[in-house]
Length: 294
Image (cartoon, rainbow, N blue to C red):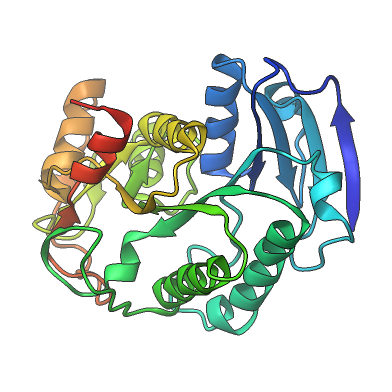
């Protein structure tokens, strides 16, 4: 199924056109907002389009990446780069769907774009590619994914790297750590806390909260993804992270304090995850160097 939804004008700014797949998702909508704010021409691609979001892109293309049409690169307006965020089956990280059906469909779609002429990608990866390793994780760490989602993402990266040996293209693999913000799925920590506050709950049941993680607000993540795409460098793997570990307990307490909420964390109500190490965060040195961040 494919349908060009909207084509208001072409190549705003005249120097760069970026396609965003998964444009109607949590990260995608924020990426579109950054592109619009920077006056960068954008082609939004998704299986489902949203009329209220139509103003965020110059052109909307509705298609299913599991069944891409012929000449999909032309349908997408032959962009200069693609920020690829589309991935189905989340947040079921342990589902075999990720490598049984999602992985082959993802590779077929992206390789088709390469064969048809797309020259630069920023593809979203995941910190789950590192597996159960602890401490500060840098991009040169050996990946040891411990769940099907992390395995499939890492396998897609390797497939694209092999493809590059035959057809050159720029690949930046944006390995996302923990993202939070408005519009996130209802089962995320941030969304669950907000819902509890809105319901008037006095306590917020959670784990012991001692696990160390690397969190970034969605607005910052979106800015980084767009900057990486504009850069168009063949950067390889880049951790998109803060580089600063924080305990989940401290994070939640900080959110409560910042918003003036009265709800109290009810620690120890849930067990710790069995697919994540207790302490891990990203090394952000490479990201800072590429984007000239402090």
